[in-house]
Amino acid sequence: MLLNQFLVLGAALFAFGVYGLLVRRNVVLILLSVELMLNAVNINLIAFESYLVSAQAVGQVFAIFVITVAAAEVGIGLAIVLMIFRNRKSANVDDLSLMRW
Amino acid sequence: MTFSDWIAEPVNWVFAAIGLAVLFSGFRVVTSKNVVHAALYLVGALAGTAGLFLLMSAEFVAWVLVLVYIGAVIVLFLFGIMITRAPTGLDESLSSDQTAMPALLSAAVFVVMTWASIDAFGTELLATVGEATSTQVIGESLLGRFVIPFEVVSFVLLAALIGGITIARRDLTPVEEEERMSV
Image 1 (cartoon, rainbow over the protein chains, first blue to last red):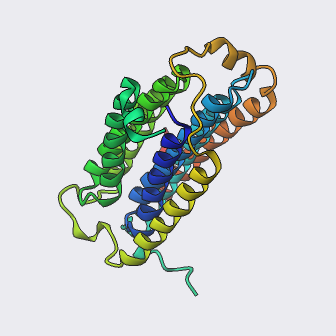
Image 2 (cartoon, rainbow over the protein chains, first blue to last red):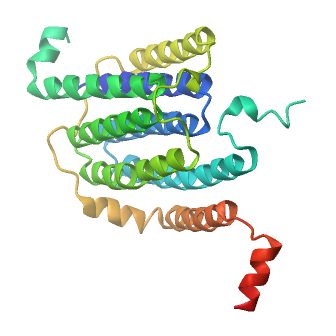
């Protein structure tokens, strides 16, 4: 297998994530897009590990770190979304313009 | 390496099948007009990614991905969707109407990254296809060279746990507080 087939797939997934991040209005869906981008990063890390083959499996360890931090991010993110929904009765980012000039 | 050489390897058929499934699911995650469907398509994208990890002989990370993401994170997302009472049917207002610039930007991101990786790596082959990575190596690496980052990341998780509870907790109203004190 080529290294590039995984890198291109990761780039495509990342591009989808960027698109979703910009286009979506619902905060939960924006977080979903962020997960998609983090997932693309994981594909790249594992592909480079498989290509370079370090003695200590550095790429795989980093992928585990990314997964852990993503789990923490989702936990905090959804707590914040919950709080916003409770205060403003909406999870739509267009309604959250209180701090915009 | 020509395309006919590439497609002659059976492992690449598997890659093509999983890759197309991942791309389709990823596309539906960002375009689906139903919130719950978007979250469930993310399951498809993540499961496909775990399959790709298995192809690259990263078994441990593949199963961690399945357990943590599909087992926990997606459930958390579904909870989030249900709690915020997002419209669960078809909803046109989930996405903004201005799709041209985001599409252009993400296409530019894709083209630049693809061009850079093809320019840099051309037809380089992966080295570990078909071999099993010993989980022992990952364990020794996590508790050896990467023990400090490992502890830091576990602390981050703990902080996120406490932070999540603190943020999401509802403050009691004065009446409720009085009731609690009197019990």
